[in-house]
Length: 183
Ligand code: ATP
Ligand code: MG
Image 1 (tube, protein in one colour):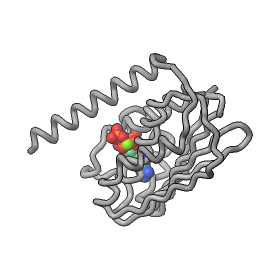
Image 2 (cartoon, protein in one colour):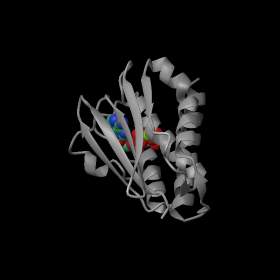
Image 3 (cartoon, protein in one colour):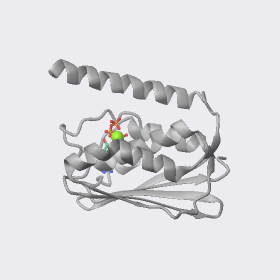
Image 4 (tube, helix red, strand yellow):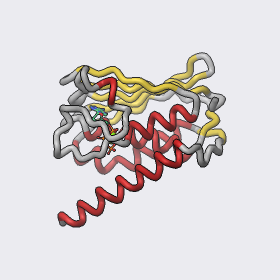
């Protein structure tokens, strides 16, 4: 079982590094109209089992009026998967995770919020760096510190912005802004 876990970990590390390499190198910049609400629902469905295991409540707040954005659908899915995976992992059992979106001045604004462990202020400036993990990420919360680097690269390749607000012991909110035109 230990070997299996190690192989799984090293495989996901290699996958993440390959993804990041491809995104940073600017490969696969194909963009097409993407329905973000659909991507979010697919991603939520994929995580349903893990959410149920931890007894988390996932709330999706999206108005029906969000227009399609010009984006890379695979990368949009990776972005949402990574955000939700973090909320799920860094929130103690029975938490509430909310993903909300709205449109403002030809931009889509997405917010992923949780009532989890939060991120210490000293770590906040570095959490988007490769391999950086906050000091309160317990060893049993497995991870390599690449998820948010991938998110940032994806957001930047869509000319968007991402930032975080967090309070230790209260929770974390990530905000992503992406132009509808895909930049
Ligand atoms: P990986 O995503 O590569 O499996 P990871 O989750 O440790 O590993 P990132 O997703 O890049 O890496 O996140 C970096 C660090 O930021 C995490 O290790 C954790 O300390 C902190 N963090 C990210 N999201 C949250 C969150 N929702 N709540 C609390 N801490 C978070
Ligand atoms: Mg992560």
